[in-house]
Length: 458
Ligand code: SF4
Image (cartoon, rainbow, N blue to C red; front, top):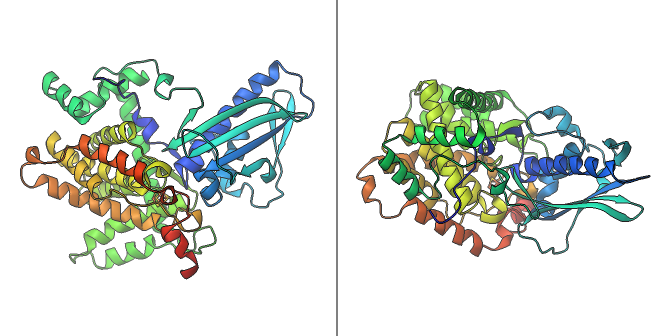
């Protein structure tokens, strides 16, 4: 292993929080919260009179931040709210009116916040990531504290000058950076993928095995709730597109045609779109691995739980298999739509779901790998061009399509000899990274091309 081992935790990948976008909502909220803590620390040693805070959003955050609720997210973070504990209705009510005023406490000082403190910068800004936020604490036109953050996808953030991996000084028991290394551990130690993932998670988080399974159950419960809520909700989604929710219609249709050959796919479509529509509405979902793709794995999981009647332990283990694939993509390519286009979001989710399906079905690690590989292969180059910057079109249907592709990837991988698969998971992830780099930035979460330009024709 030449690179530093992957240190991501399953609970960094699967996070509960409000929609609609992990990189544009959850990440910015966490960055704003972090800045607030640093501003408070800085206020201890500085005399302030009338401090103010300015937030500058660049790149994709500027291009599609309005539709993705980035402005609400930074206000929420600066008010001391965090994604997993904030109240979704209070969150969606933020900045309903342009003049809404909020007060946050920085040390002994009250600082006013309005929409005018947030600047959607149109000018070019040199930074290592397209999702960049700059926060400034200003006193008397002088910057007292300035911090730059990158929202690198899936709700992960990085502060300028900090190595994301270095934030955890613990080491995994079975270090790996590629599928090849992961499989070598399994063969050499004669352990299962579940045992490897649990040993690493325990070493990285200090949690016991029981606590890890409990937390996975909590994540699965949140996914289950998102699907159930979405199946019941009717009406229009927020935003100017006036898109009507479709999941309840599909669900009714699936129940009415339960004995036909179509029903399996219609049920799966309904489950994926239910969670995805909840995300679009700004309600609580689970990043899997991102909010934009938060319908794929929950939809597949709902199917496995309610139609296949898989038990709790099998589903937990499926989540660990999905996480292993998510780690490899995040570490060696990216799960960010702003870096990879939609192959980074729905493509990653589909590969993770394919691995989950194969692992839950008791298939070998070669089949798990092949399933994930096939799923990525058929998402290569997929653009991210959400209409109006809302995570609705094409995002909601994409979740259903990602799940259907995951299911087919699993079926294709499970037939024939998976060891003879010509393309490895590691190879396709490399291709994914190269493709993402080659794609025009117009197709990477900027809403400047593709479907986004067809908005007027809708
Ligand atoms: S098109 Fe895909 S990557 Fe882009 S916002 Fe929608 S789900 Fe996310």
